[in-house]
Length: 210
Image (cartoon, rainbow, N blue to C red; front, side, top):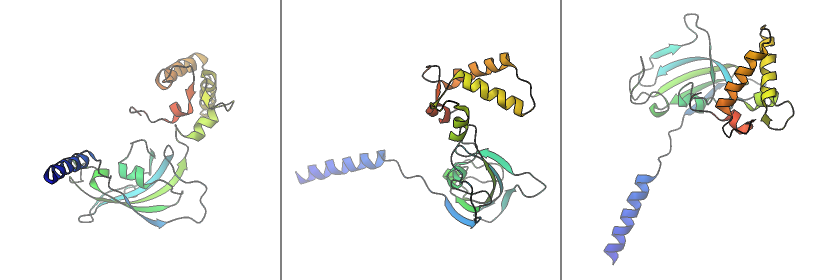
């Protein structure tokens, strides 16, 4: 009986361990500089403008720097898989003007394949400064700006009005026919339940193709 119990117990334990999801490695974060005043903190969906330097932890070799050779800082949307996972995890809750040192394990960087000057299975170190934070295209703030009657859903008229204002803001003349075509295309892709409205969830949800 005891041997039978131990056999069943060991089998169950093996199946549990085999099926359990191992915790994802974390990004090591060190704050190098933080401004005294902070108007807002970065969150998923925000657009960040950053300067950065990237080094290999193994030998300290710099593989890229946006500050050298007159390069411009880089724009990207946080949490939208436009950058490595280590950046999406490590650059949350930052202020404009803040600098962080991120130590990123291979699984949150370029993994077993590597990329360019980065060898496979490399732990990377980044010195990153956030220069500016803006509302992203799928932020809650953008949604609220478009939601004219505050009912937490976007009608075709509200989206069309937003497009008209954006075109005029950038010096383009209004074109109702063009805007209507754009609105139809937007609703075709974003109105998942086809109820004629884009909900807050549908708007802020990160689709695979984005």
